[in-house]
Image (cartoon, rainbow, N blue to C red; front, top):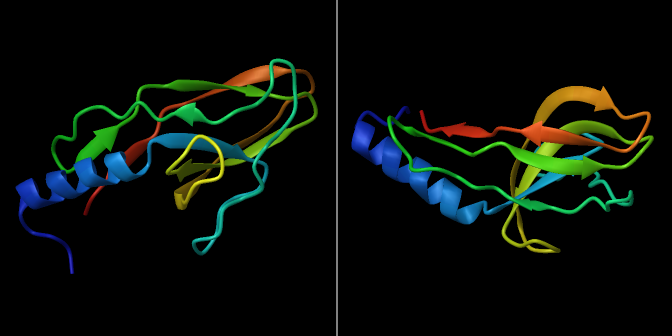
Length: 116
């Protein structure tokens, strides 16, 4: 059942943002509630970044682009959201256009959550 009241959908999108404050990059795509394989290493070292969600409007919330340091030889195939900057609870994830980094680089991700 789709939620019919726009204000309720917007409130749910805002709640999602409060639960998913940290963004991770995965070398594999998250599936069925299981996170992907999170990247590590590099110089500067890979680390989760704050999601930087904006204000929810029109049943959606959008994060300001976040640039992640990606180590040489890594492939970015998915993103995930966690409750903490390290460890924490896996909240959600999605596929991204797979990109392999021959050398150290950055990947900027703009995330959007839409409540239907």
